[in-house]
Each structure stands twice: as C-alpha cells, then as structure tokens.
Length: 324
Ligand SMILES: NC(=O)c1ccc[n+]([C@@H]2O[C@H](COP(=O)([O-])OP(=O)(O)OC[C@H]3O[C@@H](n4cnc5c(N)ncnc54)[C@H](OP(=O)(O)O)[C@@H]3O)[C@@H](O)[C@H]2O)c1
Image (cartoon, rainbow, N blue to C red):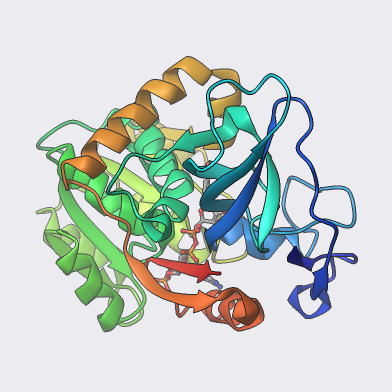
C-alpha cells in the first residue's frame, strides 16, 4: 500500500508519499481499500499540529473516506469482505488502504457512490446536529449561514431547507453566493463587498435571524451576533477565519439570546444512539434526493498537496475529494 505520511506535523510540505506494509486487521478492525477521501478543515489543522486531536507520529492524515472492505478482523460480524463502506476515523484516509474500527464504518446502500459517501458524514452530521438538535431550528424560522459555500456550510443550507427554514447564505465572493442560491438559499450576502449588519437588517426587516450558523468566527462573529433576533440561537461551529472571537456578554442578555456550542465528534461519542438515529435520517434524506454533497472537484490522491493549497486559499466550494 501507499499513503501520505506525516512524520513531522509542521505543515503540508512535510508530507511524503510512501510505500508501507499492507496491515492486517486486528480484533474489531477492517482493512479498507480506499476509493475516495474528502478534505475537511480539520485535515488542514492536524498536519500543522493545530487540531485538538494530536495523533501519535507518524500518522496518515485523511479523516473521512469510502472504499471496499478487503479483510475483516476477529469479532467483526456486521461487515463482510467486498462490502462498500464510508468511515470517519480521524486519520488514515489519504492513502490506498487503511485499517479502521468496524464500528465506525457505515455500510453503503446501492446508489451511494464513493465520492459522495466520502464527502458525507462530517459535514452533514455536524450541520444536522447543529441546526436541528443544538439550534432547535423550526420550519418558518430564518437562519443565517456564514461561510455558506464551504463544506459544512453547503450541508447546512440543504438541511435548513429540508427543515422548512428560510435561509440567508453569506459568503465572501459573488461566485460563492451563486453556488449557495443554486443549493436553495432564499437570499445571499456577499460579505466581501457588503456590510454584513446592514444586509441582514434589510433581508429580515430589522428582526434578525432566529439562528446563526457560524463556522468562520473572526471578524464576522460580533456583527452577526449583534444582528440576531430576540430568543436567537448562535451556533459556534468553528474558526476557519483564524482568530477565535471574544463576545461581550451583554449581547446575549440584551437579545435574550443563546450562545450554543456545537461539537459533533463528542456528541457521537457521548450519545451514540442519538447519533445513529440522526445518521439514519440523513441516509434516508440522501436516498430521497433531499440532500447531496456539493463536490468542488475530484483530484487524484497523488495531488493531495495541491488540494490542501486550494482549501487553504479559500478557493473550495463544497467539498474536495481525492480519488484512487
Ligand atoms: N464543531 C464541529 O463539530 C465541527 C465539525 C466539522 C467542522 N467544524 C469546523 O467548521 C469549520 C469549517 O469546516 P469546513 O470543512 O466546512 O471548511 P471549508 O469547506 O474550508 O469552509 C470554510 C469556509 O470558511 C471561510 N473562511 C474564512 N476565512 C477563511 C480562511 N482564512 N481559510 C479558509 N476558509 C476561510 C470560507 O468561506 P468564505 O470565503 O465564504 O468566507 C470557507 O468556505 C472549520 O473551522 C472546522 O474545524 C466544526
């Protein structure tokens, strides 16, 4: 097998494509031949030692992938050799093969291509858990989605529309706003050229959004929070924009609003039954055509460094997927 190896987490340039012995699965594990692996923002952070999870060195990055089970370890009853699965195991995806815990593998029904499956779990699970569970988004409410053309952002547009909400999608370019419209957004704000607060005021008749979905942070967070509606819920998803913003605590008081943390990974670990119910609903929505990953492009696995550069330069719209 071959894989991109991170021996020194000082950035993407230090990754090397290496031939490695093909491992045999231990108890509870499966060997997967990887067909597709998507890039998520944490994949960018983990090779710079900036992510909360710090794997032992050396490791193969690539949190999320899909492929074919080639061998099963002792005690694995639910998966068979030849079956196609998607898996989010945190590492291992940027190679030709990987070992994965069987309990993290989602068997794929017919009609679920590997490219879509590799781009599915992280973004849709995060956005569903955020909007429906943590945010209690209801039909008829208005949600503002920041970074709306990104991975979690595009999933959030589709899920909010599936929930019957009015979606205001905000992004940094006109091209990204067009993509958000095509995904079902009712209105868009280009925060590269427009004043965010003024635009929100105009689009909500001064009332503000009931829910704000924020994977960007930085300078957008405070104006977005200042715009929120009475009893609003501000969902803290991530900080792709860089600095972790600070918020004056009089703002939640004045709006009777809530600042709501979202950590899907820990939700899945702490509440596996609730997570599994949610994943079943998402798989059903996919089969019904209500949600579908937006694929920015597929690239050969050998071009991983170029893919990382594309994500780091804010060029990706939807999801980038590496294929073998
Ligand atoms: N809380 C959770 O459970 C959870 C789960 C998954 C992901 N996350 C977090 O969610 C965030 C987004 O993840 P993603 O996979 O959707 O990433 P992504 O596809 O790269 O999208 C991030 C968006 O952030 C905006 N952005 C602003 N400044 C940026 C910069 N300097 N570099 C890159 N992007 C920038 C970009 O939109 P514009 O150009 O339109 O501003 C971009 O589309 C990350 O912080 C990630 O860690 C959190």
